[in-house]
Amino acid sequence: MPAILTVQPREARHQSAQCLLHLVNSLVFLAMLSAAWHCSSYASKGLFGARPGAFLGRRDLGAQGTSSHDKFNASVVFFAFGITSAVTFRAFRRMEQAALPAVVSDDLGAYIKAEATWAATELKNARLAVLLTCHSSSVAALICISRPWLLVLCSEDDDSCYIAYQLVVPVLELGAVMVEIISLFSLLGVFSLKPPDIRVAPQPGRRAGSARLTTRVDTLTEAWWATARELASRSVSLEQLLRFWGELGSEGLMPHYDTERSTTNDVVRQAIIPKSRRPNGGGDCLAKVFQEGGEVIPPKAMVTHSWRNNFRDLVAAIIADAGKKDEYWRIAAKLQGSPVDAARQVDKLLWKLHGNEHRYWICAFCVNQHASICGGYADPPSISDASAYKRWWESRYDTVTEQPLPICSCSQPKLFSNKDSARCELNKFDDMMTVLHDTVLGFRQVVAVDRQLDVFNRAWCVAELVEASRLDMQQVIQVHSTSELDIYSGDTEAYATLATLSVQDCCASRPEDKEDILARIGHLASEFHGPIKLLSLHEPLGLTDFRLTQQNAVIFGHQADMLRSTR
Image 1 (tube, rainbow, N blue to C red):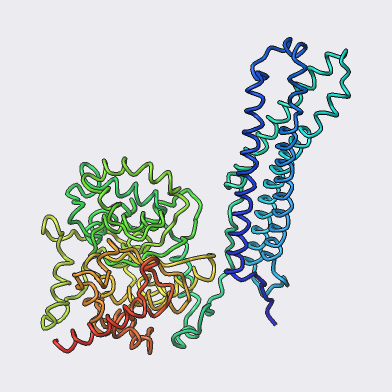
Image 2 (cartoon, rainbow, N blue to C red; image 1 turned 45 degrees about the horizontal axis):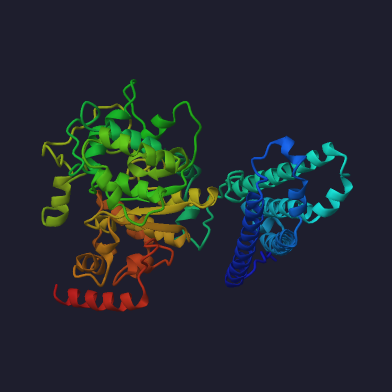
């Protein structure tokens, strides 16, 4: 029987934490008020700033310091911090017990054990910091209360004892302040340990979250899974992405790059492919070029996006995700103009976001384009399908110059699914997601939504959405502006686009890819028809702060029905 992780309900924990916070704040305010009163009494008597020799002639000041109101203030301070210490100890003790599993066994998994150990350590450190603060202040207050008896111990003829007494009290107070400062830094997380980064050994053929869509997993070979694992080992850091983007334009890669018009397809053909070509005539993915000589680090998120999207918007969406933003239009505005100039402006942001810690799997960078598309274009679709033919035609020309995109003449063998299915990298995105989901703790999907919502019209993108949803993977949507998806705004074009989407109508560069995708999705394809299915098949799917409510769904459904009836 699997072990059970016993945790206090979230609502109860929240209420307990709020009560504790109010109590601590009240006691601290009372202590600060008492300390201010205490210091003002000394200042009014001229004790601060006096020369050491003046202490001999001002013993009356020491006696005055033991007046009734000073005793009362010191007693209040000691009492307040005593209560704070007791309450904090009990509160953190309960939190520590809640953080630990009731039973620890192999069923919980290595990452749960590590998380529980880390949480217990952090709680102990926080409790220690608070207790040190309370006890140091309590000791200082206790000395103040004991001043009359300490003065009696120092005889009137023993001047050295009296001077020592006058020096010891300020030193103890200074020590208490230093302890409080260090404890504050500890509570703010300056000395905290990083959460554990546990990677579970891959288990090919097993998918967490739900059963496989079809039985095809039983027929997959080790060569197939080896390619999937190789794909999963590649990643691009936020810093590498931004440095690459800074090379575009001017005298660098792709001199005619235009931040307003150049698409990801343009950048792949004229920057990524040339930069990833090897001197021996072959080629590799750009992610491996970036990783040369360094540690192979798996990604923490996968980016689903459309190649027809503006490349600047893709970069902005990834930066927004690293910064935990819900929309990327502000960041895109910062990336205006020359990439070289804009890269300097975002250096501070990159430093703030710790660019090397955010690693992403982006198909344009992590798939070896030299083993697939670099030597030509996909076969043209039937001219009777005007929309598909238009997309194919536009994909062959640069958006800015309107000239044909260059063809790479490298000697890298081309591996397509209809020739070498096991080694092809274009047909394993879902299996690669499975490997990463099973081996990288917290692996998630980031959906970079372009302004035309084309990402929801691409067959591979929809397949990735379905797979992430089926794996119960965290899914986050990055949109240009949340207002564009506001159902109560005057412009409902975005809703109309989503309402009329159908998996059967999605596009793919190669007809065989679409057929394979529809076969993998199986019965789930029908679940993506109709209103808001693309955004509500799985609850955690993005739109974190403006997730569609049931009322929105009803309105959206009526819109979809009306739109279909007019077509």
